[in-house]
Length: 463
Image 1 (cartoon, rainbow, N blue to C red):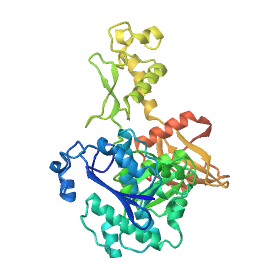
Image 2: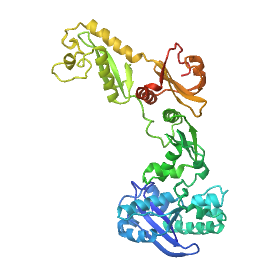
Image 3: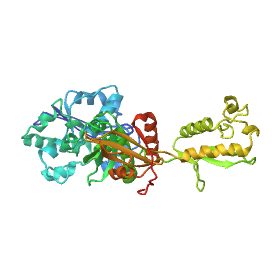
Image 4: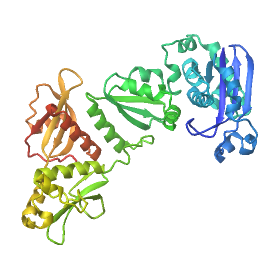
């Protein structure tokens, strides 16, 4: 038995929005044997544009039952049936979430009439419910109301059952089938071609434009996880609704995938990527001379028209840099604002500070070490991170020239990487950003055995 469901809601994802109407048609494959249909008080305001689209107003639902009052009836209609809907993951996510809130755990098989239609009756220009019904000659009544849309979905599903010559519906219900978790508009073949290896994947909209870029150690698992999890988030519903195709680019290592993802996000600015769009270095270490002639180092937020010695994203990174310079160059924690209490200088106690904070060390001598510390931040080595390639005949290479990320790619296993010009010829230059720099430096510090220091006078002309 099938439960063919349609709902109207106050918004696009279950975690923050409510159900305003539900219609369930119990269908035995030939006829509807039972119906449940009711308005529901979402206990939140219905946005004006949704009121205009559905015709369901705040006044109409004011005296309707809240979901909790009808949850047991809804569960009774659904729990032992196959849950069928047009774009099933949307309806199912709302109903499952609201039932869980009322104490009922829904766990049923699902069928999506969008995916089924694309497979069983291919070739239509659009598979939205309205356009599909028009193509099939199915007349719709009460469009954008749960009852009208559920009734239209029943008629579409009956047509699919009658025309399913390859038993696609039956195959979709088998335990090992993943049809029910896939976005309604993405061909199964796009998932089947994804590798179980590191790489970057792309979600495309109906026009082919990239709307999301992601990276993974295992591309197949990661892409599937976007759709198979139980998340009720806005992101998942956006992916389900707007993703029409999926492509990918393999990478030899997870680090390369992270770098490629970041460069692609900065270049393409996909609408559903949020995390790295705002990734900029917020803080810097600034140098200035105080009234007594001593050079001071201070961590501050970056300012216009003032050039910092170096920059970083998190203030904790700056603290780590400053502490290291204090230790390595014998600086004063008070003059570096790492000790702000009026007590005895901790640097003197620990042997780092030679008394500059008490004017026991001359400014010229102290300032010389400050300049050395600044130079250490600005003089960076050239190195390559060498790891396995995409096949046995090659190695992957990430190149850093004088502290700046140059690019990455693949070199023959027997290549002489001391020949800098030849090495650069194998690699694709990429634009550096601070996220990538922090990523590479952290990785190099964690895995020094994979790092090869290089001597070069070649400058970066490709950036």
